[in-house]
Each structure stands twice: as C-alpha cells, then as structure tokens.
Image (cartoon, rainbow, N blue to C red; front, side):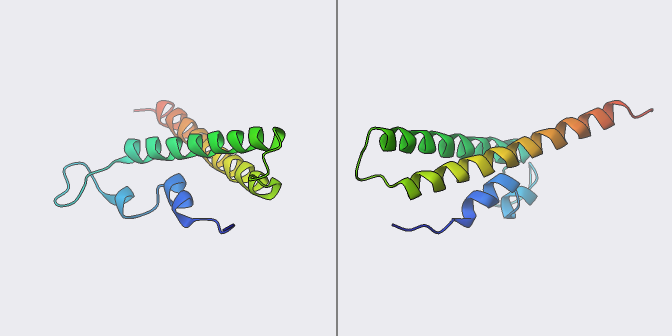
Length: 104
C-alpha cells in the first residue's frame, strides 16, 4: 500500500502552475482560465470526498481488503481539500465585496 501524498492534488487546489498563468487567446498550447482551474479543483475535491465515503462504508461493512489507515488517510485528504476550497471561496467573496464597495 502506497501512502505517499501526491503533489498533483495540491497543484489543482491552489491553481499554481503553468496552466494558471495562461490567458484566453494566448498563443500556443491549451488555453485555460481561472474558471476552468477552479472547476477542476472542485471536481478533485468532490472525487476525494466520494472516495473517502466509499472507503468508510467498506470499513463499516467489514471488508478485509480496505484498511482503517487507508480510510483515515482518504478522509484527511478530503478534509484538507474541502478546507482549501472553502478558503478560496471566502477570499473570492471578500474580493468581490471589496470591489463592489469601491467608489468610482
């Protein structure tokens, strides 16, 4: 059983990477924007939560192929992903509020 944490998930959550810097209409390569990166991150968090839920159910049913350690690790990954997503959402709401309260 491999218990290493992948760095791909953290990159998808934060939006840091080469794809986050591309602008719509940029020359060459696949064009992605903030919305696409955010959707991908949300899908990743949702998949992690579903995986954790599935593993919890298997442990409760007494499946010998699913370990408690694997289940707890999946639950922690899902929780960290959710917390990161929640922080991003809160920052976006705060930025929107700040922009709307600016005087022109």
